[in-house]
Image 1 (cartoon, helix red, strand yellow):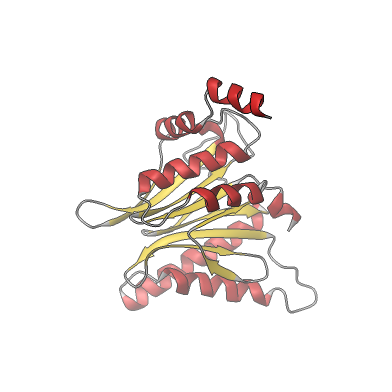
Image 2 (cartoon, rainbow, N blue to C red):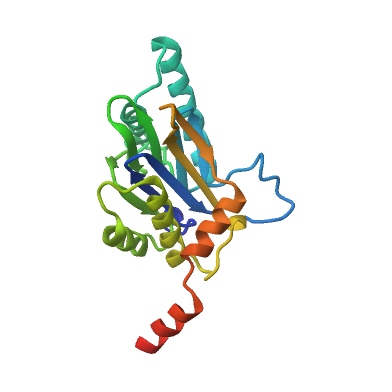
Length: 230
């Protein structure tokens, strides 16, 4: 659990017309090939993706299993696997590692976001013990209590995707160790519906992330007012 609580801030927010996951990367270098290397967000299939906090090598094993399970279901039934069913399958697997001597639990928590025809857009949190639960907004990693408090105050029913993106950015600004975070340290992903009703997943571009974070960052006047009131 310590590895999870010390991991970069990871936030998920559910909107009426989509779901967002975003995470803070701890490893940043201009030499890193960003097109091939993801630290926080991973696509599972066309309509599902996940964010991780904890031991990355453990996460890689579970992500491969999630992808395989989703593809086996699609091959067998000619339809995408329901989100909750996929989450249940991986949590059953994780729970097995808590029962026997000689095994240790996987040191990683997931936020799983996706869409299916049964329950629409969904957001789930899983922990190393194999427990999972559905949420409107959730945070894992460092300063997760602060992030949860912000989301409890600002999340509201019927929130649209753009509002949810702004809430996600605001939450990360308040929990990261820099006052002006940029795309170099962040990953944002969304599952959303197009105008034609098709559900898609995409990663936000650096320019989109930088604009979101700049808009969410406290302005000089606000910082001065906050400091004078304390």
